[in-house]
Length: 269
Ligand SMILES: O=C(O)CCC(=O)C(=O)O
Image 1: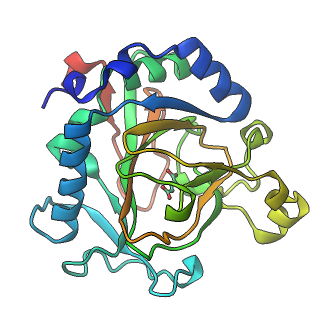
Image 2: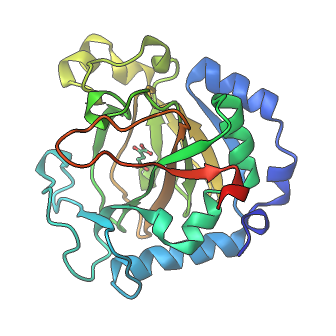
């Protein structure tokens, strides 16, 4: 499947001036229904194939959800635990040709070029966040950057795509507009400490972002975002990609530093 054929007509008419204005102002912006229905169906099916072990790739990262919907009770480091629809996170989707193609579509490239000035755009991560039917967990407020990510420059762009309808009941994305402007709450990044969220009166500022299947949303890495459990009888799958400027380096020292894969320009493949 070619990346361009995975896009909808709406995507080709997208007014990026408007979208990017919103992204800079609020830290998030809706791109509209970018992904065509047949591609969406293919990515949903592939997600299930991966969870059930019908399709496998070396080096993929899997994490199951906690059985009690508490993020605090997640277990780390177990990886693939056998066929189940209760995985909350799968990483390294760039190894799957379908997702690899989608994350290289020309609309996403145009967005990347509005955010980063480097010629090369690299990939930090390509991830499925899934919430099982009547399951999923309470993902707390967090920011996707900081020392924990071990990068020479904090990334600024993630593009999240709903593979299923993700309404409020299904555990849609929730954000606090404008929080990206204040930078990181702690140098480490990641989960926003509860007392900080209370001090900031986060609950009074929440904006929920219900999305239809196929909709893509830009998220600044500093934006406070979270999602709740899924109270519907359907799976809620989403695919998110974090892009990096071509100059960003991996600073980790315990293991060999990562070399980030170039995703744009496409002719470098
Ligand atoms: O889809 C979700 O529930 C969470 C997404 C998220 O946290 C992210 O894309 O960084």
